[in-house]
Image 1 (cartoon, rainbow, N blue to C red):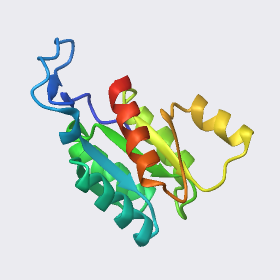
Image 2 (tube, helix red, strand yellow):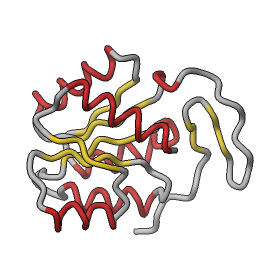
Image 3 (tube, rainbow, N blue to C red):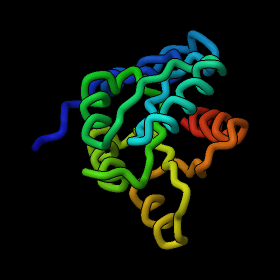
Image 4 (tube, one colour):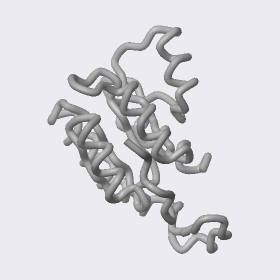
Length: 152
């Protein structure tokens, strides 16, 4: 399967076309869009509600496969992704790799309740922007999303 052609990306209120300069920020970063990917409805809904309450727009996916479809069709509006590492099917690592192949600039935070040092190094090597430990502490979740957004 060939990766989708590059498309303009919205970056915190800015757009950039292939080779073009981004326009100045049009709004506060809290209006950014976060794609939350988790197979557990309770976790996904908790993250969605916390992020929406903090002013973010949120898209959700229940699997790695669905996340790739959402990103393929709406990636231009996604500012960062929170990706569960331990999902059935494709799984988080494979999804991370596919997202980064589709969009090398994708900012992906890996979410997990457990991670060995080896696993942390592997997802970092694959391009993860950081970790969000589970169970979520809402202040930590919001801080890590803000940090990932400010790094872009």
